[in-house]
Image (cartoon, rainbow, N blue to C red; front, side, top):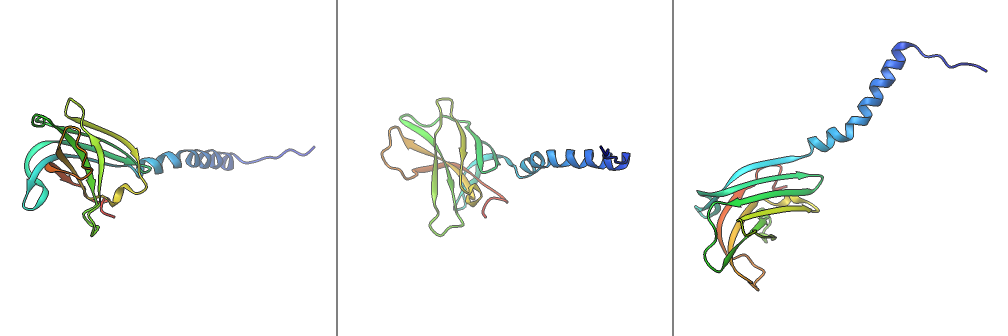
Length: 152
């Protein structure tokens, strides 16, 4: 029976190579994550954002999963609820995607996998009537521009 013999240098190289191969998926997954922390501001100058500070947005995208928390500083008016939206302002149609209504503590939590979350360029909040049957956004109360890599 013949024994296979390798040098210490070759053995060390193989150990290092194996370690690199095992951590590469985690490194790529982490490097592809995008995080945004920004203020939600009132509409200004024809935009859905840019005015006075109204709340905050924490948004993270990793492997096409959007994890977001939006919080408004002031509760909605009587018989209204807040609703969060993403909009593709770069698209001629300006597609708007509802992310749902805010909780009773004026917070919206989202954990959703999307085909391409980076097409969206704006996050905004509307004040909607309670039990609103209209699927379109009502009056915008706050928003934030989503910078690169969003808008692709």
